[in-house]
Amino acid sequence: MTTYESKQLLKPVISITEGIELGTVSDIIIDGENKKVIALGITKDKLFYKALRVIPFEKISSINEDNILVMSSKDIISYKDFNLDLEKILQDRINILNTICLSGSKKCGTVTEYTIDEQGNILNCKIIY
Image (cartoon, rainbow, N blue to C red; front, side, top):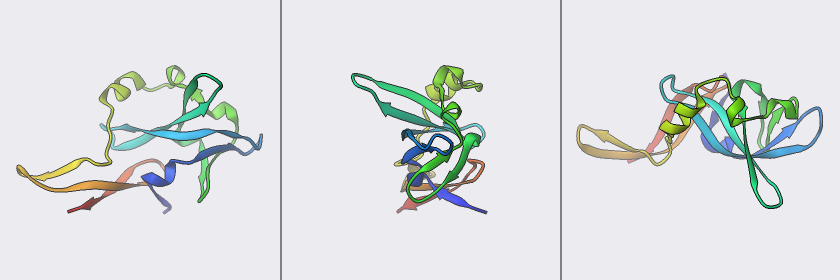
């Protein structure tokens, strides 16, 4: 089973068929209820604004050391075209990194990294005590 650390996802996205860079991952969108990464937010700088789009996690062809590969630029969609209740998920705004871990009421560490599998399931977290 291939696994990825969350920091490995913050890299350029390349279209395999078109051979162009489509943008850079700027956000990891997590469905907290299902403990899963469901999409990656892609930002591509334009002249005077930034266009924010997403790539559903299942559309990723592969993740390598330098970039994330998708088959086509058509795999990248706007936030409003995402078929899940993205508005609620974005409202929840789950961020795992730098989360404080508690044991009872005592702080026992901070999350520095998390690992996901090829389907986006969150497998574990690395904590600094």
